[in-house]
Image (cartoon, rainbow, N blue to C red):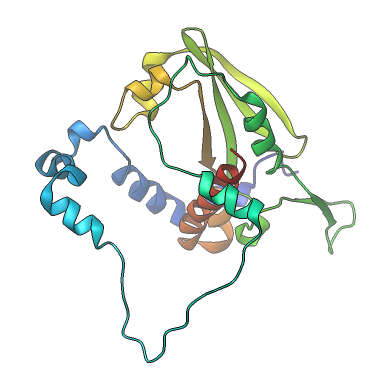
Length: 228
């Protein structure tokens, strides 16, 4: 009997131990522990860094140049242009929880498919590409609650939020999630966290399953930012 949320054979995959070792060796650590970062300093504020950043694109030799002159729907352009990278937040600003819920809703199941080997087995499809439709990613949200945070899991099958842990100290969030700027934990009103259950993809794709799982995280992040 296969238990819910577990594929037993994946835990016996020999590649998983090597993947875990690699992951542990390449984890993100506080910037104060990164020797290269300490030597470089603030890269974009240095003359060399600014010069390199301004040329951070590639021009290929071309026999013919085609100007892309195609109109894109205005609503889509607006959504793309609204996206930005920011690490400055304020808890004084109104918390738009509705937008977060809308974004999560776009990751809920949108199709059910019966198995060809057993009609009683149902696969739940989601509206984003996934390696082998294995969906290794799990989505969580951190919601600020006065002087602490609550951790909730998004159930994509039921489109529900389940509270897992309440009143997590800000210091703990800062230690776990803030690589370079500890103020993020003090100023942000919440966060969306995406984790990966590598076993789901490694059992089918071996070492490639690790990379494919991380690619899916990026796809989900892009989808969420289009809504937020």
